[in-house]
Structure formats: structure tokens, C-alpha cells
Amino acid sequence: MKKKLVFLLALVLSIGTILSACTSKESSSSEKDGKKGQPYEIKWYTIGTPQKDTDKVYAEVNKYLKEKINATVKMTQIDWGDWAQKSQVMINSGEQFDIIFTNGKDYVQNSQKGAFLALDDMLNNEAKELKAAINPDFLEGIKVNGKIYGVPANKEVARQTVYTFNKRLVDKYKFDVSKELTLEDLEPMLKTIKENESGITPMATFKAFLRYDYVFNEEMPFAFPFAGDTDHVINPFDTDEAMKSLKTMHKYYKAGYLKEDAATSKDSWPMDVENWFVRMGGSQPYADLLWSRSAKYDLVSAPAEQPTVVNDSVSGSIQAISATSKNPKKAMEFLTLLNTDPYLRNLVDKGIEGVHYKKNADGTIEDLPARVDGFNMPSYSLGNHFILNLYSNDPKDKWEKFAEFNASAVKAPSLGFNFNSDSVRSELASITNISKEFYPALATGSVDPDEYLPKFNKKLKDAGIDKVLTEIQKQYDDWKSKK
Image (tube, rainbow, N blue to C red; front, side):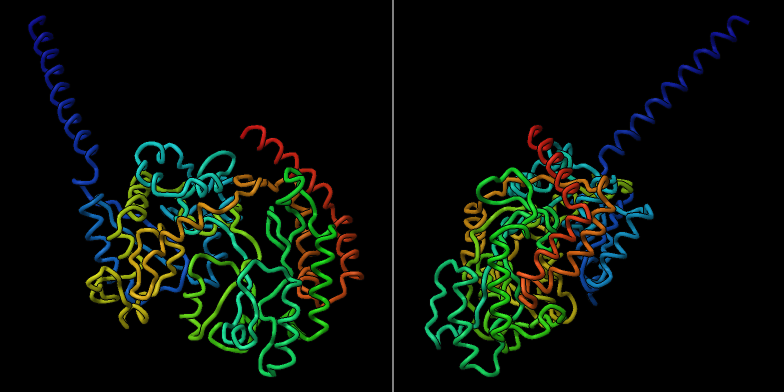
């Protein structure tokens, strides 16, 4: 009996050793994930009109990714008009996917409610190369409660609002647009155009410009000043500066410098229609060249402000990893390659060399018809711009100028502060409706600010603006003390 027990015990130990060795081998094999086993399919949702040649391009993408990280990507685009609703439905439903494009307040709110994964640990360990490739201002500015929940596209980091003019008319009347301009500086130019150019509307896409660091956006009455007391949130519409700018816009409106329906018009004023003199918008280095190429006539811009890093300017294009991802590390491996590997970045953006674009002897590229018709991607949404190929008609120092532009920018005092609005949701809903009622008419000069601005501010008071301002200030002070 004793001999039998000893034999059985020896047999059990022997089997355990064999199983342990097998398990060890399997673990060792699975740890090498990337060279062996089934490739992981990364589900990626991003913005833009679905393209005809997506499958053709991603066959090449996936061939490359299998070799590099033993993964493939299933990229799905959702069209511009459907994006906001459909992407939020996917997030709210808990759908399983790996990566999604996000930006602005959607990024902040989805991060706050746990829809995206915090990436700090991976950025500091496995994805150090990715972190090193991104301007630190981006990473600082997209922090939510002190953590990074996405990979921002490395491009222009600052906001710079500019006045953009039809250069033919600037040259014709010898206007000086060589320096920073104020709204009031435009008056003699607008008067000249109105009196002498019957087919031209003096002011196209245009609203009064109040230079603040906005907590939400320029339509909402919550902002931090860039000068003076920069640590206290205010209602920018309850200032002398607002009254002055809105009075100027009303003066211009009465003079016929804007269309009569400026407050309600949905006209996007396409640049390729030469029926306007000046418009406002955000700029970047060499933007005038891009706009002139698109318009097919020359444009020239003058700054309305110096480059400034604000939360909106750093959060305009982000790829987040979903909390429902089955393999976040593999998703991060892909994002690292997308932002550090020039071959992959250009393939995802421009398509296949020889099919969608051709490469010249000097390394520059030119689009082929197949790109325009079959794979015309929104470049800003995809990743690191600094490793994109230059076009043959791009300035050779384009990316150097972007780096200089970024380095010259001033950081807003509240860069990285993101407000949690849960405790004032009902007040914000009312204030949003009031802003939609008053802002378009006031900002386009369509109504007299002496009459309507006090009404606007009175309604904001009644809707609880002071409660919201107090809550923003409380959270800001807490954020700053921890920072």
C-alpha cells in the first residue's frame, strides 16, 4: 500500500512539472505578442466622409502593421454631419472598440465620465517615443483632472485669429495689412470697398472678436482675461471692451458692410467665390498659401491677436483609447507608429504611392487623380503633421515655421483647466439657450448693443450666471493650487 502511495505521489508531481513547463512555454509565447499568434484587429472610428479606396489603402496598412506589431486596423469613417450624434451613441451604449477621434468639450466630458482610458502610464513607459514626438503644451493642455486621456495631433499648438483679405483689392487700394489690426482699423478699408466695389460684400464670415480664454466657447459668457486679473473668471459680455466692439459691429452693419441677414444666414462664404473683401478665422503658418491655392486667387492675412495656447487650440484633434478596448496596449502601439513612423503616417493620410500620389526626386509629392476621387482624408484629424511629406509647391521650411510658431505662442493662464459642469447643468442649459438667442445678433452688429446687451446680461443673471461663475472659480482655484 505504501509503495502504491509513493508511486501515485511521484506521478502527480511529474505531471505537475510537465504542465508547469507547458504553461511556462505558452506564457513565454504569448508575451511575445506581436510576432506569433493571431493578429489583433484594432477597431478605429474617425471623422470624415467615407472614402472609396479605404479598403485598398488599408490592405497595405495592415500588411505593414502585421509585420510591425502583429495587428490589423478596421478603420471606419463617420461623415461630418453624422459624427456628433453617432459617435456619442457608440460611446454611451458601451460598444466595444479601441480608438476614436474626439475633440473639445466632447473629449473632456467623455474623459470625465470614464469613456476613455487614462494613458499616462503607457506614455511614460511603453510609448515614450510617442510622448517625445508631441509638443508638451498639447499634453499639458488636454489633461482632465490631472490625467491625459488621448493622443493629440502634433500640429500648430496655438490659436491665432486673423483678418483675411482679398489681396487683389488690398493691392488695388494700397491698404496696409502688414501689422496686427483691430476691428476699428478696418473702417476706412470697408468704406472704400463699399463705395467702389458693387459686386463685393465688405465683410463675409464675421463676428465681433473679444480676445479671452473661454471656458466653453466665444458664445458663452465665461472666460478668463489675458491681461490684468488673469486668475478670475468673468462674464466677458459685461465689460467695456464688449460694448465697444459690439458698437463698432453695429456701426458697420448699419453702413451696409455686412449682409442684412448676417445673424441668421447659413452662407459659408466659400473662398473660391470672389464676392467678399475680408473675413475672420483661425490661422497657422503659410495658411494664406493654402487658402490661395484653394480659392484660386491670392489672399493675404493680418493678425487680430498674437499666437496663444488655449484649451481649444490643443484639443482640436485627439485620438482616444476606449475604456471598452480589449487590448489597449496594442491600440497604443498603433498610435505610436501612426505618430512616429513616416511611412505609416503618409500611407494613412495620402494613400498608396504610385496610386494616390507620386513622389518626386527631391522627396516632395504630388496628388494623382485617384487621391482626389478615392482617398481624400482630413489630414488634421489623423496624427503628427511634422512627419508628413511636403507637396512640391509647399515652402521647404514649412515644418520649421510651424515649430517657430508654436515656440512663439503665449500660454493662457487656464491652460489645462477643464470645468466639470455636473453641479450646474440646469443653469447652463438655460444660459446656452439665452446665448443662442442674443449672441448671433449682437456679434454681427445686427442689433443695437445699447439696447440689447443689458437685456442679454439681465437674462443671464436671472438664469443663474453668478452660480456658474462661482463654481468655475472654485474649481479653478482648486486646480491651480494642485498644479
